[in-house]
Image (cartoon, rainbow, N blue to C red; front, side, top):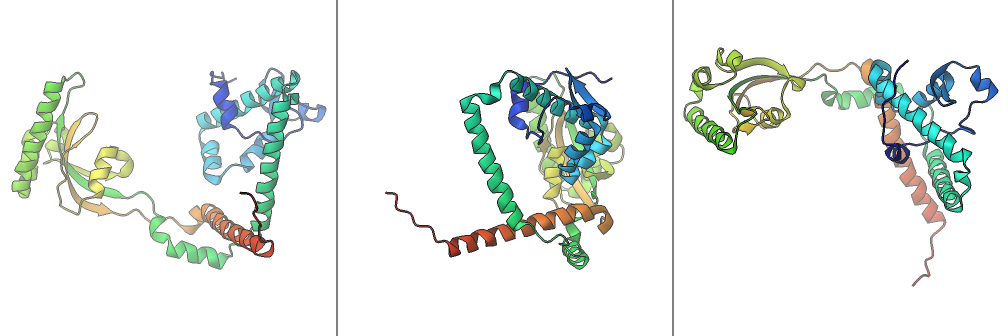
Length: 296
């Protein structure tokens, strides 16, 4: 059995959208269902868990299906929230006038949102296979697997316990080396062999080979994104020191096949169409029923 960790309870309440349920305590029929989590007599059944997943966006659902830690935390959060609701109702907290007022306000908001959403919902068969294929082709270039860059660096390390004097000295040294390589870019490799603190790449003239985006520090990604092939970037600082980067080549990732992104594209197109239909619905509503404002 997995052990639950403590979570800030107020944050949980504020962050959660409660699933629709008549009671937090299990009914006789629910008690007979397989249980995925239980806390103080409050449980989440397998059926309820499946319903929760259906309400999630595809990316979140996919993450929970693949990653046990994320799935456990999600269920734990939901269970604690459900337990808190049970306790609040057991002491009649939901009957307090101010709570009832908030219930009414939220019910009106929910009613309004769902009514407008129903009026704006695209047809069940939207998008068609032809519309989906067209959208995929027009946006294909943005639907790629992560690309790679061929890069070299001169790295100047800053010791973790360095004082401000040492940090300043390393920064100034990086500027000096940058001026040196810019004066003669062809010497980048020779300078890297002698002056770079990253011994593995220094032995190869600073060449780090082909790297994917997730293999690079965020600071390095920012610099490389602004470079053209064979350009050298201004020194950039990371948590470990200073980097002088040279971009050799960029290799775009392969296109993701339509089958791999179909669900995400369908959802994106339906959201886009829904927003368009909502604007049209509200426009027609106002045209048919022009508002008259008399307040001063």
